Amino acid sequence: MSEDAADTPAPVDASAAVNSEFLRVMQSRGYLYQCSNLAELDALMCKEIVPAYLGFDATASSLHVGSLLQIMILRHLQRCGHKPVVLVGGGTTKIGDPSGRDTTRQMLTDEQIDANIAGISKVFARFLTFGDGPTDAVLVNNDEWLGQLRLLPFLRDYGRYFTINRMLTFESVKQRLGREQPLTFLEFNYMIFQAYDFLELSRRYGCRLQMGGSDQWGNIISGVELGRRADDASLFAVTAPLITTADGKKMGKSLGGAVWLNEDLLPPYDYWQFWRNTDDADVVRFLRLFTELSDERIAELAQLEGAAINEAKVVLADEATRMLHGDGCLAAIRQTAAQLFTNGGGGGGVGSGGADMGTLPTVAVSRAELDGGITVVELFLKLNFAKSKSEVRRLIAAGGARLNDEKVIDEALVVGSGAFADGQLKVSSGKKKHGLVKLSQ
Image (cartoon, rainbow, N blue to C red; front, side):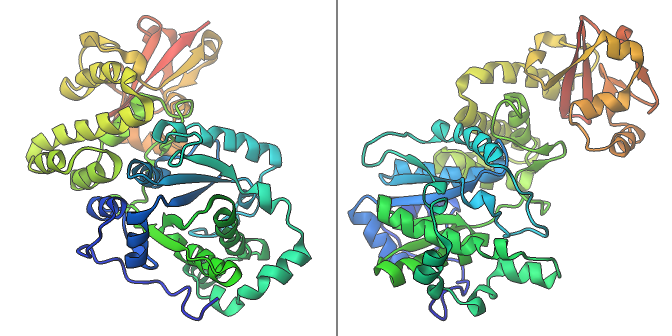
């Protein structure tokens, strides 16, 4: 690699002049953080269709909202007349990306990886148009080439382009070593295989640009340099800022766990509720990043103050949910939200005010379970409203746990069938998180 290849550049000047539509969108909406050669990439994107890729490893059966920024970038790329290449990491998942990790990732079997790829691939069709056209998206799996590599020929042909000295300067490596956490030789090779992905995609699909989060800069720029050294190819790197919420938390998590994009892991109402609960300080930024509302409309919403900011939160929740789950679910979600947010959900038990409570996250319990004795703590855990019994107990002690809108004061309470009105029981954690427990036979 060249001596300065892995040096992390300063963020792109927000006022830098760009002419291509895609880079203007990236810049104006807050996606553009670093670029390896902004002027040259801008000129290229003004004169021709540029295939560009983003990679997603298959470590779970669904992506979560932390990946949504990257998916939105691919969507904007296509809408601006360029070609998205979605790379799923069937090969690199077998290694595990060490970026941002304190420990080695769990090794998955081929069967688990294939199942995860099937799961995460579902979401891309919601945001991108796939096909054979010049700007249609394509989905590829890097196991196609990584799985066929032979070690000695690969090291002979490409290992000479990487130096241990430079790799040790990468932020992902320095952080692990600085915390004295083991970094296996397997993980150390991840960056080489990611660089080789870029080379292969350049050869197979004419990819000129790799995009990713700013924590991937070292890996991405390695691919740019490998393309130059191996094929004399002019490739480019662009990164987006890592998104954190106003309280400093990493995007993609909620009190109940990961905010999954697949409906089988997170109901549309929960997804809507995640956006509705956005911190006041994040609303305008998230409208730019996670919706396609016009700048003018966002500017209007940015003027809202005090309690009126909740209107902007509802718009954010509606637009983000519509994009992922479609319009069909919004009417039922709004009906339920009208009761839970406007009326507070109080006084009427399950389904009061005509709200469609069926849009809430739901679990079932059998009469046998009730006869055997099920505690209120177990109900909260069943709904994933807490990660541990002690967390539920703290919620109860703080007065935030309710059954059918009645405050729970006894953490040892055993719930019986008498608590189920019309065969269901409303469970609430705080003022904004609600679910149903349904009685099955």
